[in-house]
Length: 113
Image 1 (tube, one colour):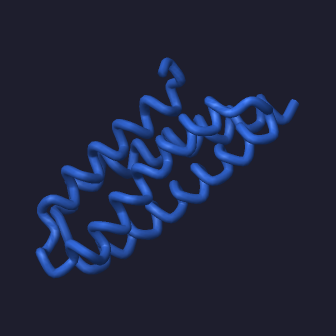
Image 2 (spheres, helix red, strand yellow):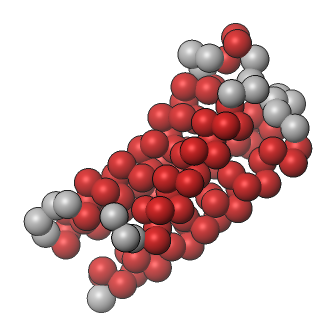
Image 3 (tube, one colour):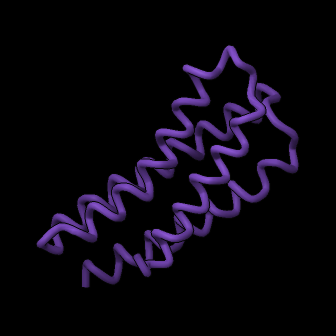
């Protein structure tokens, strides 16, 4: 897929997998699972919306992707507060979250008009 927002979302998911690999084993079925699922959901919903037949459906899935992005941002804040991972390890995922957010908003606004 050639959508930049989708490409960034895939990068974000890859970075989240790398980030969470160093989290405590006790979080494997907790925060690790939640963060990975939310990150995969962002790219997946962008792709699913793109493949739908109407603009309204596309917008609906982009909205879901945006919600998953907000969920992931919250989980990153929680993980940082708990001291999981090194501080610098969050720089790329946080930057990609910001990029995906900006690109999603731009795409949603474009499709609304």
